[in-house]
Length: 199
Image 1 (tube, one colour):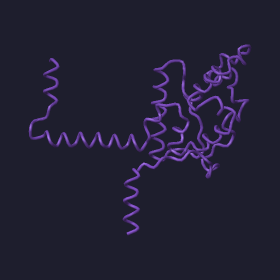
Image 2 (spheres, helix red, strand yellow; image 1 turned 180 degrees about the vertical axis):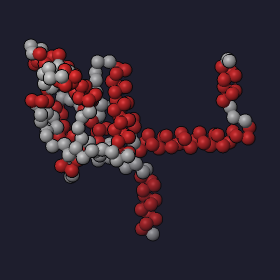
Image 3 (cartoon, one colour; image 1 turned 120 degrees about the vertical axis):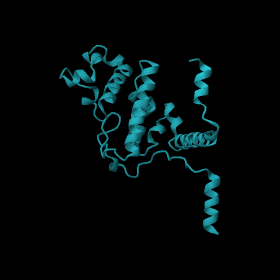
Image 4 (cartoon, one colour; image 1 turned 60 degrees about the vertical axis):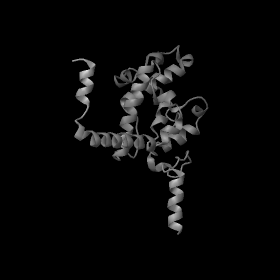
C-alpha cells in the first residue's frame, strides 16, 4: 500500500468529517490546557522551580535551597543521569510521569523516599561530581546494587543530611517559603470574575 492510499484510508467519509474535526479540536484543546496547567514545558529545563510545580516537593526544595548544594547544583544535577542525552530524557520522562500519576491520584506518601532507580542515579552523580575527592577510595565504584549486596555503603549512609536534612515529611514544613506558582487562569478572566462579584 503506498502513502497516498494510507492517507486516503485515514480520511473519514463526508458525513463524519465535521464531528471528527470537532473531536480532534477538543482533544488538542484539552491537551494544550493540560500542558499549560501542569506547566509541562518547565520539565524540559533544569530550573529547580519545576520540582515544586506539584507542591509535594516543597520540603525538598526548601532544604536544598538552604544547603551548600544550592550554590553549585540544581535538582537535575543529582537526580537525573548525565552519562548520555537519551538516558537523561528517558529518565526525566519516566520519573515525571510517575510523579504526575502519584500526585494526580493523591498517592504520594506522607514521607517521600527515593525509589531504587533514583537512588542509583544519585549515587552515580555523587561520584561524578566528587570524583576528585574519592578517586583514591573504593567509593569510586560503589553502586546502589553493590550496596544492596553488602559490598560497601552509599554516600548518604554517612552524609545523611546532604542536602535535604533528615526531615522529609510533607507536614514537617507546612509554611515553608518556596516560589509561588503563577495563576493558571489568565488575568483578564480573573478581572471579569472579580468585577461580576463586586456588581
